[in-house]
Image (cartoon, rainbow, N blue to C red; front, side, top):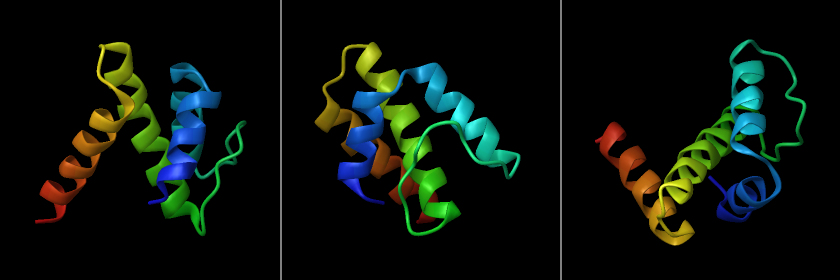
Length: 79
């Protein structure tokens, strides 16, 4: 998970664009937006993180806090 990539996605794309990218990736298709990552799994992680963060920002949460929330969610899921 690369924070600069996630930040770029959050800043450059709308929530609907990110959700469309997620849907395309889940269908093993190339998303309409450019998503950086070393493999498909990392790209999907970047999109999922961006969606989560974008939703939190729209609810009034700061980017840094939204990123921490997502990171905590990931840590809890693998514990």
